[in-house]
Image (cartoon, each protein chain N blue to C red):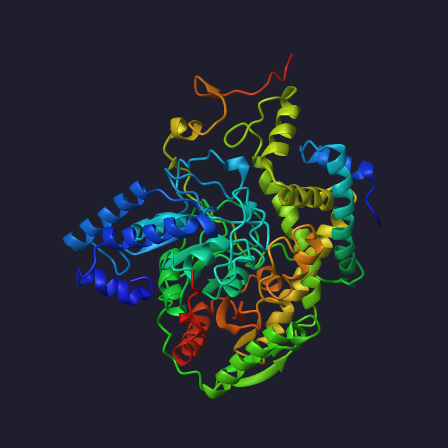
Length: 483
Length: 95
């Protein structure tokens, strides 16, 4: 069952060829067997998982099941889930058993999806390699010397290693697309506001967006159908008609205009990544797409703009971790300020501290205009560049990252090198556009390459269509690593 | 521009994060490298550009003035480091 699509799993559950309890048991066994070496999960709780699976079987029996009832899902440890340890990859929340559930979790439970476990991630979603987790790095199943990408590294690995059929993630600057690319799975970050942020532990609120991982675009579309939806408890949740993200999957691509931003193919792009991307573009031509050259002239400026705005918002969001209402409190301290300072010093890892310090500085008196306001103006320029590009094309295609997955520890001590690797993904978050990653081959070192597809606002169904037609014609997405 | 040791000390204080001297030194080096990266942005002419704080033009929704959230004090305080009689305990702040 581990290679089955969601459609096949759904059919097998409906036909009683397999029960939800059996299905959960099979994936749990794989997860337990391989978690020691991959470290994809922070929490596995067999009792809770099997209880949810049992409920799903009851729903299958009494006719109240939906199409996905009984299918296991792995949740990024950033979504608060009632009764489950919810750590966000941090010592700060190392003892936090959430008393409530995120909107995404509520919707998954309502659909009858079975929680398989809680996946590892960079602490508070800050990182591009999953080495910033308090619970240790995640290993890339294609090459255990390689990082899986981040911050949703555990979710990407869970799907890539077939420890889970689907997984949830979040993407603030590339945290779904980049690990999907590094691990050879499919992932989509929807338009900002499509998935509720209620109960999704905040990093940079104006950029954070939840989305699905799957083996295919079709599986992502089915999970996005569950995750998306209006929620009054998130002030930025968009009130829109419910969409069926599978509706356009089969649409032919003839006449589709695919824009290639020349800045995404400039210096810095590794030649083997470029070769895999070029081959994918050639495949799109065969499928009838028309290739047009476009320009996103301020691509480079996305890095400084993002690394001002995201830390600024993070420094504000993470002020809630004060050792009073939840989370870690130091054992020894002097006075109230001492309690804050010591609890935060012990609870946060170094990358998180660095971003809080950066954010505090850019928001401090005398620097606000020079940094924060300037970054927001550049954000507008970048968003405008995308709108100009979409006058000449329907979707934008290019690499997700300049290289394949790098080696563990290779960039761990060099934050600037790590930040530069985010160059192709950050702009999408700044603009609030939907973007996805589709596996399109392997580099010389055997590590996967992901093609990034970027759509205009609310074009998720089109992106999934463009990815699905490619996956009908190729089999990159069906390749699985030998464990 | 470049951050001094004292600048980093000051922002650590504002951030309510205790740092050792070694950490201050490391943070100073790293933050200066990060601000080196950010510096590129400051030279861009943004005259007349409206700052963009958000991807969507969200209008704050109003709701009816009704109590909707149930009282779940016990559940929420079950994750607190120290509580007594329904109150959060912190070190003494007023002498």
